[in-house]
Image (cartoon, rainbow, N blue to C red; front, side):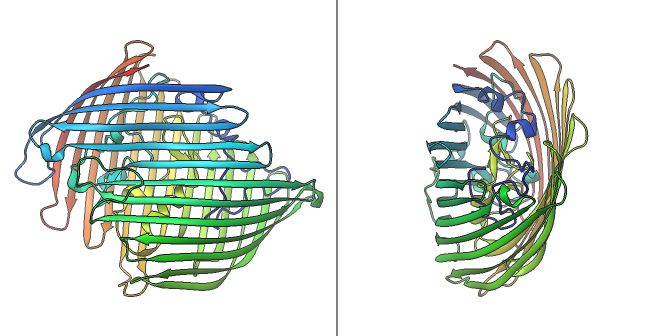
Length: 536
């Protein structure tokens, strides 16, 4: 993996044992078995640039998404895009960018030009020594959370995916009205240096600059990475990290010392500035070739200034185990004191069979909404559908971001995601269950808690090499924002037919049922869409 662990629950970037193969960006393709679609196009040496354009017509029976009066509308969607997949001796890049223009016949106030971006790249300046990593994400999400936990952030949407049409269109297919949409983006660049002292140790120095913003969509064309309007939030930070890890000379022992500092500036969230400083020492012992145990101790100082001021100045400790019986199975379980509380951590990818994989992640921390987005982006890689996935497990990323609403302040947050995926000859089945929770902290906070539980099922079936269908059902329940209990249901069916190597057509039906406890926010909607994509 290119980025340092901004989350202390995932500290080492170099395998914890001499023979352990902790997943990284270079072997992720093997770990996930990405044999088709977006990722495989860039797995060989060389560069592939795939421009495309989609034209769509959409009908909805409730364009404003209100209980009454319900108004129908026809929408024309024009979505040009480009996928860039590169793999050379000096650079690796996975990028998908798509601006989506929506023009409504009846409700012109709903017209919008939204942005969608997923990108992960590494540039080698000096072989084996100096590197630069760049990654970014932009997309729309439900401002009030819910909506089945789905969103356009890091996810290309619902629909069939083929090698000639790597990303399904329509900005995540979230289909929400502008008054319930926010444009969220995050961008990070990290130059870093590795130096190996033979078999004795490996040193790493890095600097990471991050910019994250989120704005409610009020105007016509929200811009990524630029905070716009009264309801905009922004976060910029600079992180320095130094790490020294012992090498194979010490046989089954491995010591990892990490020191990091981060300075942040925020606006629109009740926080003016923040600072994080930490030192941590972790000792691993490899019991067998596949089993590792570790213990760690250190100190952290976390400070937020502003109206929601918060300070945590505390010692840290932890212990756990890592089990890697084969390249497709990785299980890490731990228990630690960090961010001021005792907590468990877990990351797992377990190959039940050659076709069925179970993934699980449990993470927690202290931070703002935008810091959560940035931290999850640092753990991302690109999946075969062009969406961002957890680089260690291959499971879903940004689950809590798309489920919880966009709120200000500092939170203690945790999220659990469990996924089961099975790839058959003609079918791909995915089942996921997630729970996201956050409790507000800091001066003046009432310690209010928000939490959302979401279950999602998807089934992709290939009738033939040219005709595929995707069925999706998602149910979400909880409190996505303070004071608003909700129950949301999303059901969708899409069909895609490949006319030629560069042209595909598609049709989709989505049903939304959103029930909020607060008045005037419960509604249901039917959405029908047909379109065509031309790839050049």
